[in-house]
Every structure is written in structure tokens, then in C-alpha cells.
Image (cartoon, one colour):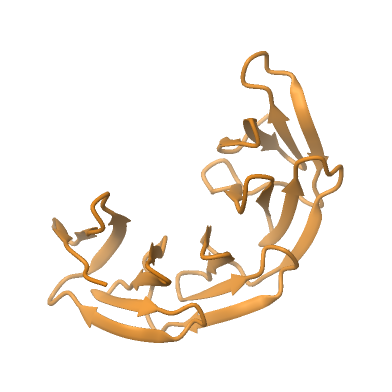
Amino acid sequence: MTSVRTLAWGGGVLTGSGQEAVLLDPVDGSDLARWRLPGPLAGPDAKAFVPVGAERVVAVCEGSALVTLGIGEDEPARLGSYDPFGAVGHVHGAVWMLRSGRGLLAVDPADGTALWSVEADRKMVTDPLPYVDALLVGDANGGLRKVGPDGRTVEGCSLPGRRLDALAAAGDGGLFFAAKGTFGYFALAP
């Protein structure tokens, strides 16, 4: 049996395998909650659970389907099936999906309706970062853009001559970046 990446959530440890998600008591390992899913959870290397609040989490199933699990709820609520995506997360009240590396789709975690989308003509860097009331999104050509809550690009810039591979938030409000052959940091000003 192959299990997925675990998540500390809801006073326990959320894990799962196949079509089952289980919230375990961290002290004795007993079940705090158990849910039967409409499809198998995403593979062991993918992010299978995305917290969207203290009492709700989104589970990622194979076939690009999302469901929500809630504390005290016996059945998962299906949000929908979407175009294939390579990464998923939660920021500013929306669940975002990186669609096969070429765009973002944000959906409402309550009902799965599309809130906004960003089309891209080049491969995007996984994990957009929250920044004030927007997201910072990078692309493989060194581009960096600030995307507003409606999905529109507010402003953008590029790292000259750099192929951007990854972005990460620095604790002081700055930004770490990994580019071909280098690693760096820059400060952000609101």
C-alpha cells in the first residue's frame, strides 16, 4: 500500500491511500475521521492535501479532480474535475492550479467555480507566492509578474539572461530565486 504526503491538520495527521483519506490522532494513531473519495488520491510524490482553513482541506485525486474534506463531515464534497495540472495550492481565499505548467486557474474552495485564470505562453514556475493582496508568478524565461486578485497582471519585470526555475518567500518579505546556475535574493517593496 502506497500512502501520500501527510499534512498536520485538524488536530491530527491527515494521510491516505487509494480512495481513502484518514485523519489520525498524533498521540495514539487512532482514527479521528475517515473519508471515502470518488477516486484515488494523487500519487505519493504529488501534493495530495491543501489546507483551506482550520476545518476544511482540499484533497487532490487522480484525474485532476478536487474534493473538500471537513471536520465533522462524513462525505467529501466534490469541487470538480479540471484540465490536468502539475501543482496546486491555496492563497487569498482561492485554490489555484498550475495547468500543465502553462497557466493558472483559481477556483472557489466552497463550490469549485472558477474565480480567475492566467494564460501563459511559456512554462510557469511552480508555486506562485502570496504578496500583499496579489500573487507573484514566475516563468521559465526569467519573467516575474504580480497578478491581482482578479487574475490580471498588475506589473511585471524580468531577470536579465536568467532561466527562472523556482521562487520561495524569504522570512523578511524578500524573495529567493533559483535560476540556471545561480541562486539569489532580492527585496520587494509594496
